[in-house]
Structure formats: structure tokens, C-alpha cells
Length: 415
Image (cartoon, rainbow, N blue to C red; front, side, top):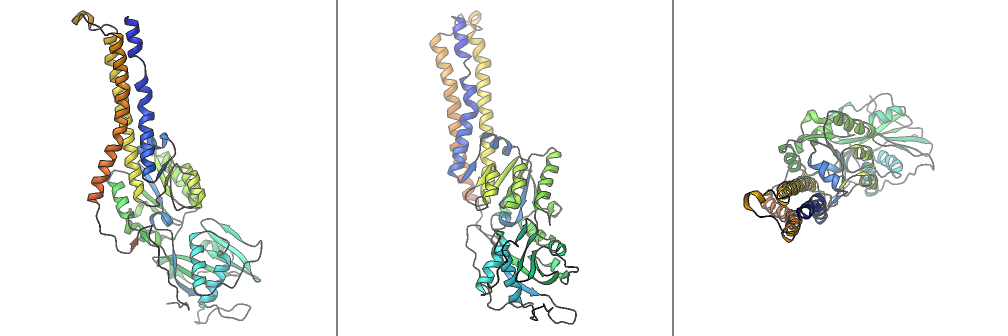
């Protein structure tokens, strides 16, 4: 009889249900909140993350840059540099040449150039078939007419023949800049503005209060990256600018070597390698397929505030798992001696098979009930946070769900 009692009590149903029931409830809760969580191990890792690395464009910003200004290159005498067609490079020419190259790319800045050129009726040049080449994080080059046109960073155009930079002041601009060069001569540059998500500052603040180290990586120039970091609240010594895709991956690896559990948040193909390497890869829902495919968490609502929701859900789910395991262990620690007759010398009584079976069932039901209570706990917390959420917004920032009004002058003027 005692053997039977012990076998019934020792049935590990509660232990077997402790983790999967909590994870099932957690992932289903995530789905209702627009969070795609790929597996229970993601919840476990995310709950322990102590460093989060953000991409800038499309993550902290809305990822819809617009062209704000086109500046033509001028010689020392103040006369526009002439090409072999004996035409001066005007702002419209620069935009048209850049659009001819960028018509073959899906990069956000390339799309912005195309939209600006279309609005200014400057789309009249096409790249020669087979001449287009793009390097993520650097720029693109193509042959238009008989000329090689390169669009991208300073380093990129220098690799394509430009010797000196006649726009040293461009590095002090608080905007993203793309340089346009023709046959090794700098023709001009194009300035962009990308609005910051209105929830970026709130998210960074919430993460910092939890003791999480926040970093920002950007392929943009230093001044533009620092301006964004200042607005959203990231420490400037944790901002790295002008990084290539492989350098983002290297940075993640270096953080992991410091025994940090690292999450990476990005949205573009430039972030794919870093997202795949990070302990938790997090993709914005509005990002490209390459980013979402390799990420373990996808913010389907394309709102950065969902990152905090996912972190809280992960921590609460893991807390529930631990509660379930403690209850299951406590049940076995107390139940097994009682089933073995530990109370018999003291009280003269012992468990009956029916009571032993009822206790075993009760332990399993308790674990499942505690897991289901996770839904109520998260709903209550979400309700409280919704009431406490401030309604003011940061000046000059925009929600990622908002449509960006774009207006382009019919004639580009440099200032």
C-alpha cells in the first residue's frame, strides 16, 4: 500500500507542466499584443538580457527619410564644376543622377531620393544594364550614359576616385548626408531628415531604469548619430557611428565576450548578421524580410514600445515558471515522506490511494492555474501602465505609425 502511495505522489505531472504551460500562456499573450515570439527559450533569454543594441534608421527613427536639401559642388572660384557635356551641375542634375543609381536599390535613403526626384520631375536618367553595384552600409554605383555615378558615404566616393571633399562642413550637419560623385569628381550632396519615433525616449528610459545597458550602432555619420542619441536619451559614449554591417556583428560578439546577454534591435538587411548573432534578435515589423527571418522576436505592430512589453512579458513568464517549479518541488518534498508513512508513528494515520491521487491531481491543477493567472497579472499591469502613460510627446519626433508628409520644391536651391 505504501509503495502504491509513493508511486502516485511521485508522478512528475506538475514538474512536467510547470514550464510548458507558462510558456504557452506567455507566447499566446505575446501574439495578442502583436509580438511574434519564436520559442520558449526566447522568453528565457530575453528575461535575462543585460545589454540591448539599437540600430538607428528605422528603429529609433521611423525609417522614412525625406530629402531636405540638395547642394551642388562649387569650385574655388565659385563656378559650378562642368562635365564633358559642357553643362553645369545643378541641384536638379544631382538629384536626377542619384535617382538613376538608386532606382535599383531598396535602401531607405535610395527610396527617399527616388521620391524627391519624382516630386521634382527629375527622373529622366537610367543606369546601364548590368552596371549597378551596391555595398550595404556604404553606397551604390552605376553607369549612367557614359559616366560612372557613385552615391553614398565619403569613404565610398573616395574609393571611386574622389580625392578631396569640398564639403567638410557637411560633417557638422545634424542630418544624414549622401555624397554624389561623377567620374571621380564630387558633384554635390543630398541631405535627409528622418523623424524620431515618439516612443523612443520613453523606451530607452524604461530600459535604463531596469539596469540594462543601451547602445546605438549606425552607419550614419557621427553628428547625425549623436543628435538622435541626445534626443532619445542614449549615453553618447555608447554610440558608435559609421559602422558597416560586419562591424555591427563584431560589436555584438565583443559584448558577448564580456559575459553579457545581448539583444539586438534592427529592421534592415544591414542588421541581419548582427540580429542572427545576438542572443535575442528583435526585428521591427516594418523591416525587410531578411531581418524578420533571422530574428527570434518580431514587433509586428512596428512600435518600439512593444519592446518593453516583450521584456515585461518575458520576465513575468519566467517568474511564473519558477513559481510553478517551486510548487512542484515543494509538493514532492512534502508529499513523498507523507506517502511513505512518515506520519504513521506520530498520528497513526496514512494516506489512502484516493487521497494520494487527489493530491497528485491538485498539484497539476495548481500549476496550470498559476500559469493561467499570468494572463490576469499582465492585463492588470498593462491597465495600470496605460493610465500612467504621459500624453505629451517630444518635440520634433513622430510615431512610426504616422504617415510622413513629404513636400519637395520644384526647384532645388542650396543654402
